[in-house]
Length: 479
Image 1: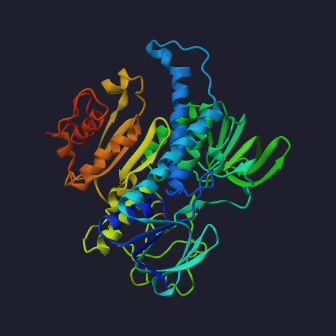
Image 2 (image 1 turned 90 degrees about the vertical axis):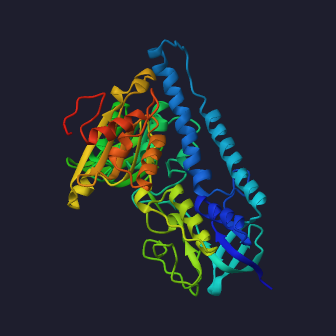
Image 3 (image 1 turned 135 degrees about the horizontal axis):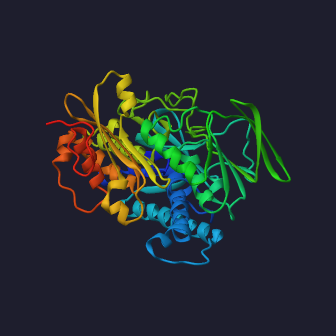
């Protein structure tokens, strides 16, 4: 006889584990199946985010940034440090400790909330039956009233540069280098490529980033992208746009990468090559043909606005469905789905999903760009404030970047906030909250911010929308 559950979640990443925990909190008998294993071979709930993505990459980004601060910038504030060095294996080991602690934390949360954690592989059959294969090979069947599919995503690849796990690696492999490569190639100038390129560039690698698109960060505000490109190139990242990679050859001296640009066929030689061309849904083997769930040519599961699939009482959330592949977006979808299963009526506001690139300075935004709104025929007013005019940023010797706010010209409603600068990942949350409450730029301008703080840059940018900024000359003077 099949084991019975109210909710079975397949996938234990941020979308899946959040769904499972919330379902159990709501009194639903819940199981969560996840195949991930840690370096020690033990179950490691948390998905890509905790094991091979968000968390380990931030551990390396923060460590490498601290190294650069000590080696290059502490002298600016009067702290003289000699002989600074980085122990890369120790940095990697600490990263692993952080990962182990957090993945173990998910297991503890499951236990504390009454979620049945099931290490292994889940496959959806017809009639909301789930085939469960444990890591020991034992197969059983679960019967669910509701199924939540949260299988996550995996790194995408391209034919010219097949990953071998040694000389040519994906984002997972790039988190395991035991020394900084002398010459490092990165394919892709997106979020992953810029973050990994920054880590190893700070630790001494000569980094070349090859990007096929003609524009840098086309999804970001044009001013923010332009300023970020200048800053990152100034840090030593050799970012080459409109370069189409055509081939690679692994040899005794590393990897020879061939590509085409405006001048024709080119090549570079690197010791290691990171393929960072995005991610794709991990839906292989997830669905039996009789499950009733549709998958498109790119592997995405078809869902409606509430993450419901074509199969009754089957939902899909996170990286396997439309929308940005972001941990926080997946988590909110997972919670929304199980709360609706329990009879509540929450919604995910896809207009206020924050995006962050954890370079230094950080790049963060929420909402629409000025360019998108102009193309849509929406008249806007903008306000911007540079961190170079922020007392707190100057005092901290970290004053590169700008806050830009885009508001509807007629209603003054905030439509987008774009930040390049220190702690942009934290500051953008203020913008998300404001936009969730349909705030106007004037609302933010009338809000009191503590002084001196980096947040004052958000305040001043909001004031600038109406031409009322206090700490800079206003280009537009309005009553």
